[in-house]
Length: 364
Image (cartoon, rainbow, N blue to C red; front, side, top):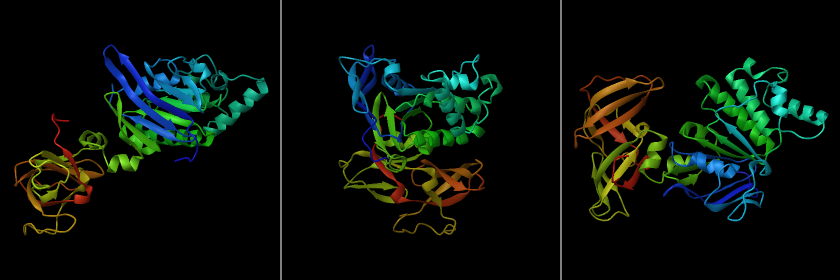
């Protein structure tokens, strides 16, 4: 993370539509060259937050600062053009009647030679040299996205706000365009706030992820920490499929098909959920039906019957019905592994990869 004073600061941002808060007490700080992703499902308040920072939506409560200067508080709200923010959306919104050079130069001021030099600089930076005379209809979707990026960067905004900017691109192009965009934004020293509902995109692009739910930020941190130390079951499930093993904590222990789990901090008799991702549920191919045998990290083996196996390309998903309690668990196995339904196999779990949460009141 860049070691610099925040370029964008947001304090207590709140916006109601009727009685319901669409955004509820959101606070953020983003340094120059840093990419923060607002990640969450549709309707959680991500885009509303972005619009308030851009200046096209007025918050009910909150303060927004750019390079320490207040651009919005209870007494004032500067218009978008006075905030030094760039905007990128899924719709590239290029002017069809203007050339590529004309689109990029549209918001620039100053001498013609200076504007032309800035256009050429940006075309080179987004790997489109010589494209200035073309029109948008002559470009591919990826090329249009790079022109939109160059246009947004042309006036040298201090903050770039991006709302699902890559979702309209073909999957084959998306990764390359994202990498190019990230490289250019960091080279410009721009503070970036990216809105997305795709965990893979957030993990790929972000220095920091702010996970939103119900208008609030429920967890913030580096991609590694948000993935490996989720705040709750819903946070874990947002990043990947999960297995949930339910039980009751008694004497700080919970009995499971894989032996007793330590569950400190939960009241005696409280229902708990032990969450583990499919890739951390291991099939013990060496056991050969010899029965459970505890190990320090993986604990006790448990037997399950294969119900279904599916090949997914890079790995195979195998669904089991556990002998212990009839619960269903899914394991992810690298490569091709398609055992027949009814096959009995022994399973182990990585205890250091499990998360323990209070039982959810409703299914997630």
